[in-house]
Image 1 (tube, one colour):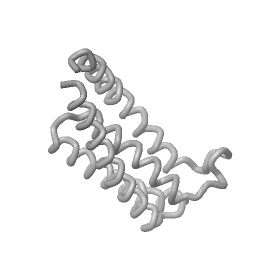
Image 2: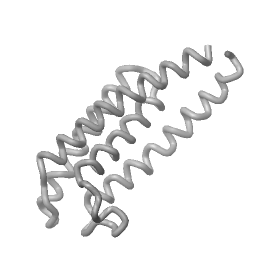
Image 3: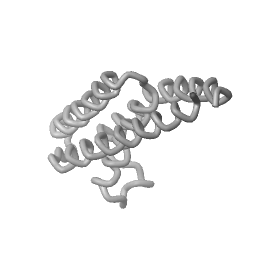
Length: 125
C-alpha cells in the first residue's frame, strides 16, 4: 500500500539517525571501568549478543543496499573484536567468547533486520 511508503522512509531515516548513538552506547558499555549496577548480575554473553543483535538489526533496517548491510555487519564484527582487544589494555577481561557472542548477535540481528525490512518494503509497494 502506497500510504505506508512515507512512513517507511521516515522510519528508515530515524533508524539511521539513532544507529550512531546506539553504537556509542555499546562502545561505552564495553570500555567503561565497571558495569552499571542495573546489568551487573546479567549474563555477560547474553548482553553482548543483544547489543550487537540490536545494532545489526538497526543497520539492516536502515540501509537499503544489500552490500551496504553486509559491510555494516562486517564492520560491527570488527568493532566488537577491536573493543575486546582494547579491554585487555584497560584492565577489563578480554574474551574470545564475548566476540563469538558479538558475531552471533550481528549475524542473527542482521538477517532478522534484512528480512523485516524486505517484508515492510513489500507491504509498502
